[in-house]
Image (cartoon, rainbow, N blue to C red; front, side):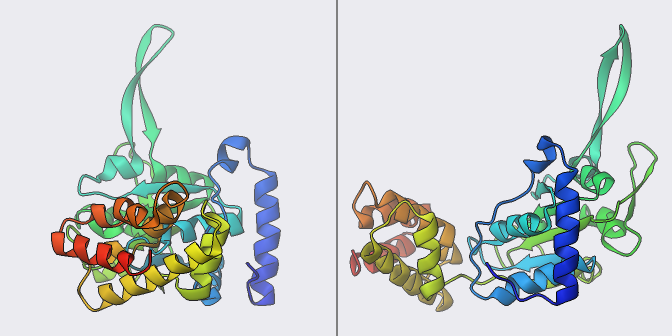
Length: 293
């Protein structure tokens, strides 16, 4: 992907990436993401890169399966930054974010060790932190991150009594699916600490390119039908007849892969329709697929 970045940002990106990667051991190199995201608009990636290069946090907002995690991994790749990940849930608490204490034995003596969590690790090394589905976490948990997300870049660790100061390079990338069951709106104090990037579903020629590059299915006529299937499902989702889950690009890629070894309509049934709870939605997906395969 050729990005159209301001010259100063591009020079900074290249310089810092080369310096950073050359100093990493293999353990941290393995945490750097890949380049698997295909953007419907290069401005999505360019704007996220500019924001991160300026030290801003980025909130990726879009429907499930639109590629938000893949985009976070691409940003990690472009910056040469290891990516520490948190999968948010209703059970997410301070220990899951910051770390926990555990018993250890040294030379026959029992001692208490602190095992750092993803926030602490990312801050102490100056790496990226990715929080997936941040709006699933309980609202009372997230304010602990406020200090890390603003100009202070610090957090008081209640388990050690220490103040953790993030090293340069630390930034937070978070992903959000708005309006889904189990999610809660982010409070304004938290949302204001992010630059928001909308991540829509990819469609048309861009989707075809992604399928050609990433799918095990290489029959271009079949892939063109999957592109049309995606357009039809997205249209039905926008009309309110399907949940956005049915239009997931991730699920579409699964269906395309399966179609190498089974009929395409059955592949759609397994990868897309059968994930849905509503019987009417299942039938609608099957009917749409039946018009194409």
